Image 1 (cartoon, rainbow, N blue to C red):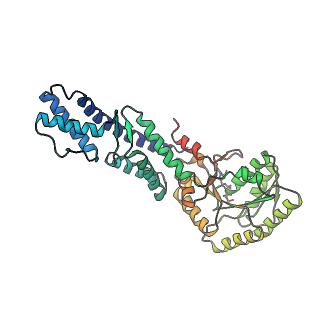
Image 2 (image 1 turned 30 degrees about the horizontal axis):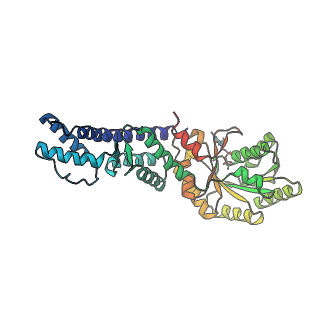
Image 3 (image 1 turned 45 degrees about the horizontal axis):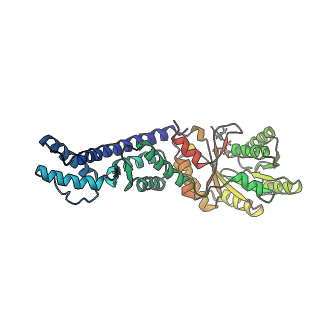
Length: 373
Ligand SMILES: Nc1nc2c(ncn2[C@@H]2O[C@H](COP(=O)(O)OP(=O)(O)OP(=O)(O)O)[C@@H](O)[C@H]2O)c(=O)[nH]1
């Protein structure tokens, strides 16, 4: 899971960590020499100091009094050097500037884009890492790996955690029956996700009915019926090509009459551009207004899934997304981008074909996975 992205993040961590270490060494050598500035400075040592100053000078954009050019005499060197050392090192700390991070941050952005993370999301992550690292005082000898990892974790967590929403809690507390409609294109795992959620709610002690609202695709009704019988929940179905609004209406009536807690309505796969099917979906929502409309797509589709979610959200506002097939996803781009782009939470991740392979989305868990050994 997310192997390619993990490798890229780890590469970035090492690269930027090396940069920080390089700077710490340069600053530290200036610091060390500063402590001995009252001793006699030999020509060799003076040369070393000049080199140190060059490194520090190149490595920082902090304006330092007297830093223009390399001093010419040994005593000039001593004075210039002492001023620089004071400005850069304070109680064995040093400051990272933008120049230190420019190249690795550029590489980070490229790596994020290659991982199918949407452009605006990649930019937000890079900006966050930059603002966390640039201008901050770093203790010489502190663990650079941790510094970088913490910054990356926070940046990724922040873009993923828009409007986190607990569906279990919502369903437990909502007025019954709770009606949830599932939308998305064909073959992404919509029906399987409905079956997984039906089992989840049943395991939580709730009664569930599923509505076979995909009357469009041959075999879709049977597919849902097989799931329903395996899980042991009731299905309401009509004939193929029937009116989905009528099927779903019947499911709601059944739930009300029999005090069923949750109605999960399947719908035919469609794009937001499919006018007839979108009109059909609007009719379903008019006849039996859903409490929640959930968009389902596959994580492996990367940017395509994110774009579809955004387009769907514009056409028929969704309440959140389920991303399926994350077990087969090496890039992680859709999972990282979708909440930020739609401003609606990811609710669950599909992580396999079994009914229990559904994980409640937790941005902290996700971020930890990205940095797990
Ligand atoms: N590996 C993996 N496979 C999944 C996951 N979720 C669903 N699948 C598989 O994806 C395939 C398509 O799933 P369906 O549930 O039939 O897809 P759908 O979106 O309902 O498709 P339509 O009925 O055509 O609308 C099936 O073979 C599922 O077993 C998942 O999280 N991981």
